[in-house]
Image (cartoon, rainbow, N blue to C red; front, side, top):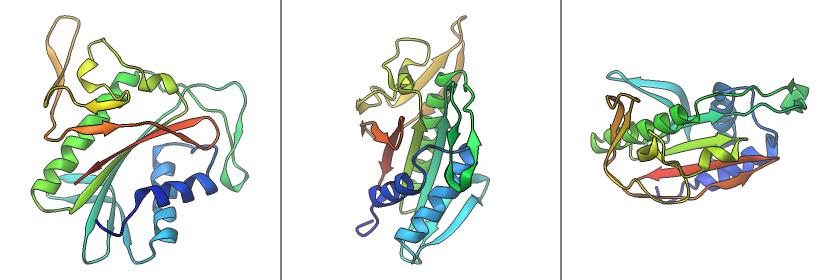
Length: 196
């Protein structure tokens, strides 16, 4: 992973898509196009599936295989935005930010497993939102799945419990990661977790 720089891809993506995306699939597609423009040597595969392990995007150049997982979460905005190609969109509210945070850590768990199985050489988990509150530290049932700035997770065994105390979701994360959200384009924020 010496030559690949995900920040170069994000800068290209911000340049070409500063107002966000229609949905998560659109985010993945435009990220793949940006990656190919910045690093043309990579072959891009969307929805890569190997032994029942599905990955949103794989970049492969015969020397290294990089896995990418994406989360895209929006809050409702009163004014429509102009996207690339003249498309106008009014963002809807994706309720349940906790499920997106849980999914983010589950994606990290998945990429760590693929790395340990030597099916990828590295990976990146990306979270993009126009709702900065998604990065707030939480003390709710999803507190183990926190994505606020700092070193995470606190424990390697992450648990989300129902109001009755039953385990609802869980993840086992091997690494410790420094999370730092950044500004993306016009009123969006993103978080990237590299998995090596």
